[in-house]
Image (cartoon, rainbow, N blue to C red; front, side, top):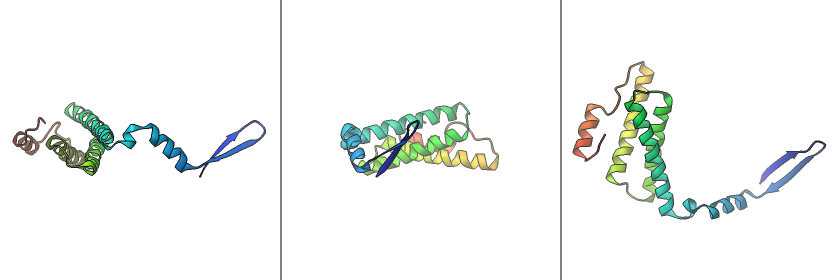
Length: 134
C-alpha cells in the first residue's frame, strides 16, 4: 500500500490506496500499455528519437557523457523491442551502432583520447554493405 501524508497547519492527514488499483487505473487509460502494437511503436519511436539525437551530437563533435548515455539507452530500447518480435534490418543496425558508439565513446573518455565524430571506417563499410546510411 502507498501511504500519502498531507501536513495541514495543525494536524497530519494520512490516507492509503492500494498500489495495484492505482496501477490498473493508469494502465487502463494508456493504450501504449494495453496494446502490443502501440507499445512497440511507442518504444521504437523513442529509441529512434534518442538514437538520432545522439548521432547528431556525435557528428557535431559533442562528446559528453549525455551522448554516451543516450546512445546506450537507445541500444537498450532497441533490445527491448526484440520482446515484440524480430527487429527490422534498419533497427538491428541502429542497435548495433548505438552499442558500438557508446562503448567507443566511453573508452575514449576513460583513456583521455579524442573520439572521431561519426562512424568509424569499419562502421561505414558495414553500413554500405547492409544498406545503412551512417
